[in-house]
View (cartoon, rainbow, N blue to C red):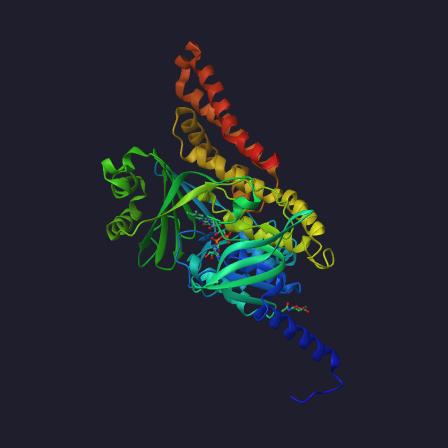
Length: 503
Ligand SMILES: Cc1cc2nc3c(=O)[nH]c(=O)nc-3n(C[C@H](O)[C@H](O)[C@H](O)COP(=O)(O)OP(=O)(O)OC[C@H]3O[C@@H](n4cnc5c(N)ncnc54)[C@H](O)[C@@H]3O)c2cc1C
Ligand SMILES: *[C@@H]1O[C@H](CO)[C@@H](O)[C@H](O)[C@H]1NC(C)=O
């Protein structure tokens, strides 16, 4: 195209783009270098690219991932995607609508729909006025790999982002009298070629087994159980409550069931460490699935579950807990599972991650941080991030851990708390709207969690008193039990609250 002198502005914008693109492609230099193109890396690349930052995204394998993680996105996560302009990444992947949960306690069901969507209420006010019906929140479940491929495609087609397939080996840092500062990373491409990438800010988003976490965080993940994943195949949905996540409670640890496509349902079976029935002597995981898990499932799911056991190919993932810590090294930050993890029972990981990106995007906006080379300002903003994110993440983290303790109950007090929790859900109304609103990432008030948790504790004591009747009251045994249950509730909850407030 000939040079047209009366459109200089457009030409100059074009050329700065070209220069930035060339700097990324040829000189491996950008404003931001992101390690890992999973949920966090891909989304963050687009979010920062939209702000005009020049972004390099590094991923060790761009093949569509095939994993048993990150398959159910809570309404609070769908909403975050919408805010980031990436809501369409949930389209055309055969995703299934999720309208809430069904909890089955020794096969007795209780229906727990998501509450009406407070997050979107202001925007849908007009619509509400017209039909007087508040919109209910919705989540989505899907094949993890398909969602990731969509997010990666969005990053790849972004003019301000360049994606490289290369494995990050180590950070590049220099040490001055003011301490260490990270300026980029060293990588290995196709397992042979060393490469170097430089950025004012390096974001480490390399997932649950992060190689770089321990250099920048004092916390280490703790895992006491694994989720074993099976894929049930079927013509039509075999679940008792279609379009709902299913939580199966029995004498053993919880099982999750949710559709991930029109013809596939995921089963995630929690198996705590040292479960006797899953020991090698007893026949291992397969025997545990057959003898213990299969009979505990709703009858209509059992045939497809049995088929999936026969097909084999079980995969497992550790269920980790990792409190977030603040980072003090200039030029680098952890995000996603590298920073913070909670038990996946409540499917909160991606919702936390996506909301983190929404918040971080605000805090790093070029109007606040014009130049990311200003590492002191960036560190300060990450400190603000660390505390502000807790409104949502503390709720999701504490809820996931506390609920898991109840649902995997392995002593008499926890079993009463589990039963009390179920009775609480059966009461309906606010007794389900509150808890599921917290879980969905819609209610962001830690106090609401505290309130419902202790309401459950008192209800559990009441359930115990009713069961033990006159005899318990006369002998004083009930009083002792009541104290023990209350004590247990505190022991379950407070360490996780402490993990959130201490740093
Ligand atoms: C069993 C299980 C089930 C779960 N289910 C849910 C759920 O239903 N809903 C939900 O919201 N959350 C769920 N989670 C949590 C969720 O999967 C995570 O929170 C989420 O995937 C974190 O995203 P991330 O981007 O931090 O990490 P990841 O998605 O793991 O991405 C990390 C990326 O970094 C790449 N990478 C790693 N090392 C390097 C390197 N050295 N160089 C280059 N690239 C590298 C990896 O290839 C990967 O692409 C589950 C977790 C588990 C364990
Ligand atoms: C890319 O960055 C430029 C500034 O370098 C900005 O003007 C433009 O809006 C960004 N592009 C997109 C698609 O966000």
